[in-house]
Amino acid sequence: MMMGYALSASTVMGVMNGCKADTVTSEAGWKPAFFDAKETDLLKIITEQILPATDTPGANEVFVHRFMDKLVAEVYTPKMQERFRKSLADFAVDCKTTYGKNFVDCTNEQRDELLLKHEAAARAMAPRVKEANEEEKKRFARMTSQEMSTGVTYQRTNHEPFFKLLKEMTIVGYFTSEKVGEEVLNYDPIPGMDIPCLDMSEVPNSRSWSL
Image (cartoon, rainbow, N blue to C red):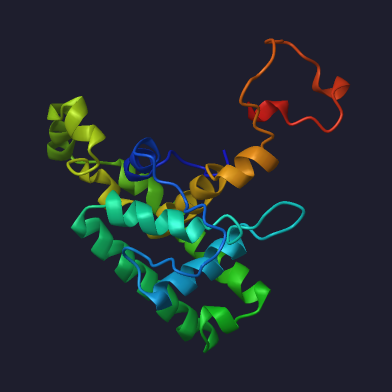
């Protein structure tokens, strides 16, 4: 519901393959596998703007940018990697053109405005993305489950709007992190009895829904 649309195959495949943010609690010694330092810094600012720290951890605190780097490096095809990198650069250029400064130097209001602009553009593209032509539909139908699960042959993701991929990676990276799972979602590794019709108003401040 937070995404507003289905997750892309590449992101789902990344989680299935065990991609997650590095749990080391320091940036010292960590090196990105795909993004360069400038790209990594931009991703850190964007993801923190999407999920800032409040009474819960922010995206940077759980190293969402590391999850994104690992996902792009290990799951994306070379063509998808190239497109994501170019789209990230285009985002930076758009910010410079719109506000005359880099994203890091923008105010919170300007950052939000730019992100909302790109989200609106992605939503407008989504219906057209889903309209595969007949040849594409036949090609998808011919794929075996193994081919689709590799994330290599399943090229439809290559046509997903950039901001959709960026936002879903941010959210998935955040909610699959160990810290958020244990402290925000109230993860219970050994759940008790199943009460299917529990009135949540009877359980103050409960996060049982996360199970």
